[in-house]
Image 1 (cartoon, rainbow, N blue to C red):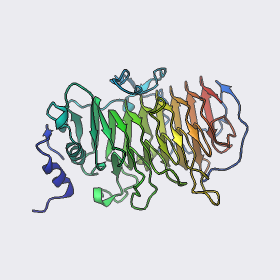
Image 2: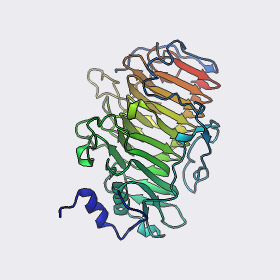
Image 3: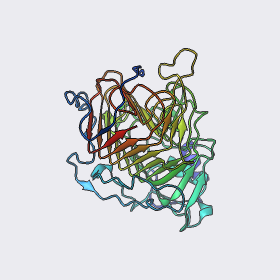
Length: 411
């Protein structure tokens, strides 16, 4: 009998993993006026919904879904900044909340820190299902020597829950977590790999540190995603922290020191809840573009989260200026593509840095159908860049609808 790669991974560490159940555009260019804004709309509401109904939910924390409580074990961590914006007070829709872990598929560890190994973690992710950790009562860091990779036929629900005690580290040499529905090595489960409803990956109550994807090419696609690279299905991030992750320092289409995403099912948003990218000096993430997060053709609903001290260090923009390697945009957030919505609620974006554009946010909708919605959020004190046609620190086409309420946006 020939074992698959997934089987080999799982069998090889079966003594370390307790199984509770069966395993299954351009930039647009040009400088604009920068002003100080607090409160009312800064964009043309006509068309704020243009294209957004094409599968992208209008989720800013109060979209009609029943709100849910999201207990956060990382509000007062032993080390490092907390997960989430302590000043954020937005309600969290039920489908953006924590996933149930009461019946785990796999328990990594036997109650000791030593039992929570890289091999056990990688095997658990390969096996899929609901993954929890039993590494003892104290915080533990698990340093991976290669990415933990999701197999697309092990869901549909895949949950990785660190209980607020687990840190996954790339050791400064590898990406931490990878999911790609169009990667045949991870099992191609549908003919429409770029628009399928599974796997649905949730990471919660986790810390990601020292991920490094500078040597990753993703089969010829744009690299990025120092901690997490995810394409297809759905991705959700709750109560998580991203510190000192990095991806390639130059390149016009390289992005997402913390997270890089593509092709979410039916254009539905990535939920990012109670999470922190950087947070304090010395903890920031760094990449050519998107010091915190980066995506192409993906909507985001970001709730009660924090982006501080992240950096976009490329130069030359996109397309790259002659004689430059490209990049340098989106200190906190980098969004590129077509129909998409960036929705922020209860979120703070401060003290991020760029070379080129969008010290806080870079948002380019190539077909001019995207929109930005900002509620009860703060965007200020970000450094560098140009091309701010509507608000300071946000780079976008001047016809991009931007709805702002009860927020501060200023230099």
